[in-house]
Length: 379
Image (cartoon, rainbow, N blue to C red; front, side):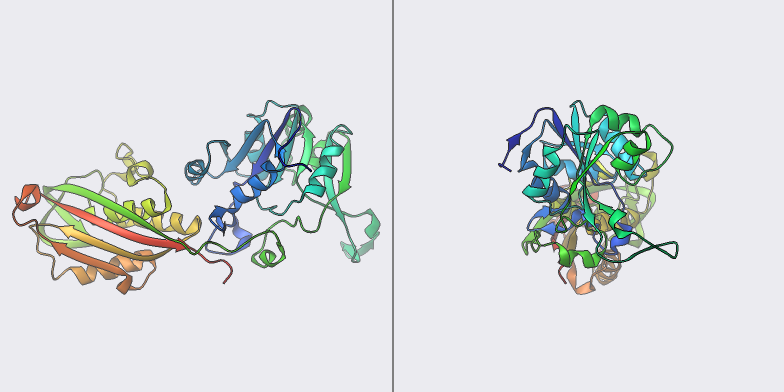
């Protein structure tokens, strides 16, 4: 197949909103890095580099779709549903082409020949489906059945868009597009699939995907800075601990300025915006919330999308309170929250030599720097 081959009226849907529970890894499989590229984008580019689609649509989970959008402005991103079928229905609402090619982002290694076999049959029937023959004996409900009548179905599958939309208007949950179209009496055309186009489902499947490469070993640095003024009659939370006999901070949350700066440094390192985008102060759910809860959410997000924290360096600028006796406890508290050794969370405290609002004891400022790397799934 010629790179960038044009086809009339064909769109691509890549399904990537699953929860990845069967993969059993700290990283969601959608976010495994091949070089710098996450799996969902790697699989999408594998197809878009072969064909020139009218539309490119990728589904993602509601917690990750905002981050996915930072990777490309050529893709239409659609929030997935509670099932594969619901995600596909959501994506189909955006399709205005006569044909649609649907694949799973976990189907990474689709080669030119397999794709060409699918495209060549697009005008035969209502859907074109790749399959594999079965070579082993097949037993169904304790009965041996004729293996020549068994097909292992793969994706991508190419459908007439109007037929697929109609087929999915059902309460029945189908595991693939062809099952839905066949159930409504549509014509299914089968073509030879490819063993190399194995779907990544379990961790051990990674060893069978020949087209992938190791994650980059680059290090990513992020900076965060935050300021809060004091507020009387409110406890001071700083660095995850309560500071006795000191006024708290004026803020929508508990005002832990050190954790807020730390969160921004983590988000900055992975290119995920800032704390205000994730936890807006206009949302009452975050009113007076413990900032350690926010830090835990960010840690889980950072890990899910494929990163490991190396170390964090935090500088607290305050005339008051004096923090010498609190730094070690802060370090241990934040290290526990980020699942790293305390040595990798460094806390520094300084004054501004009586200068500015900090020197006038009106508030506290914190600067944080974090370094992260991709989780090496090869280990």
